Image (cartoon, rainbow, N blue to C red; front, top):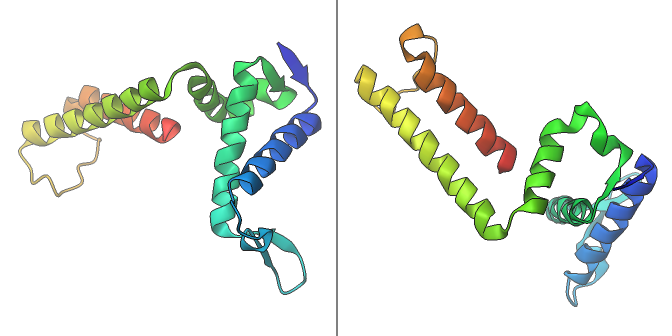
Length: 151
């Protein structure tokens, strides 16, 4: 595994993501991607920033799949982000979609159990504070956390 300094790693994935953003902008001028603030600073439009962030994750997944990581990857401060990148780098798009569907199904199932067992209106938000429903609520919260992590 190649571990590079954080600043080099950030520069590498940022440059590659920027190249992807510009290449996928088609024939549109680069001004479409940028806005100028009142003080003269240029920054990406909101849509361009979202695409850039997605490209950064894609590039980081490719780097990780090729055993190239930045030192910050190894820090515990980025555990959720690192796990998401690792999963995206090691499973196929189909497997990733299956994971999403499985998590959605688990959430629906646990919410259904909770609603069925305590016989309430499904439109009500049921708090997980009753000891009788601890197992259901624990599984539901775990599935929701995974869903948020991998979305």
